[in-house]
Amino acid sequence: EEVELWRLRGLRLAVDATGWLFRGATGAAGDGEDVTEAACRYVVERVRVLARYGATCYLVFDGGENPIKQETATLRQANRDESLQRAVAAEAALLEYDKENSDDEEEMRLQNERRRGYIGAVKLNFRMIELVVYHVNELKKNIHGDITYIKNAEEAQCLLTTECVVAPYEADGQMIALCATGHTDVVVTEDSDAYAYLAACEMG
Image 1 (spheres, one colour):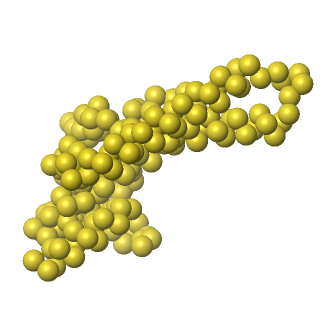
Image 2: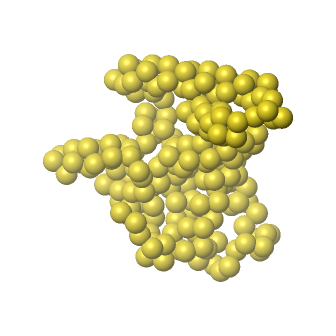
């Protein structure tokens, strides 16, 4: 459900930060940009925006792989490997492409194939989480000295109370638990698995 940001004022948000990392990483994949840095920046910028609207983020990251989903994880890795192979092949074809006698449509097809391949090959890692935690802590440390982006005390308080949480396995269950125990008010995620955890919570 889409919500206007001003409606989140005063709320504590359990955010699927792994989803944000993925969006940031895929947005930079194949562009020559450092994917890890881009993913971290994507998350931190959204923390700042939400703080400006008076909302506090609890950033919840996926932890270790769930043993129950080992088969799914193996399949996803195989798909990433295949995507990377397609991207490398398309990039090699582009390097050998004769622009003098080129077919614009074929060149565009190869560029799109390269881009899609690198996006499909994106794999998140713990270094991304470490960078987000580092930058969030830096925000907190420098909050009183850097007034270039802090509008008011409410925004500063939201940033100071931002938390980073690494779930034992997937973030969904951890986010629902944070809401169920009163630590947060809202879950922010695109993952439909959260509904299953929520239903289990309500039945329990």
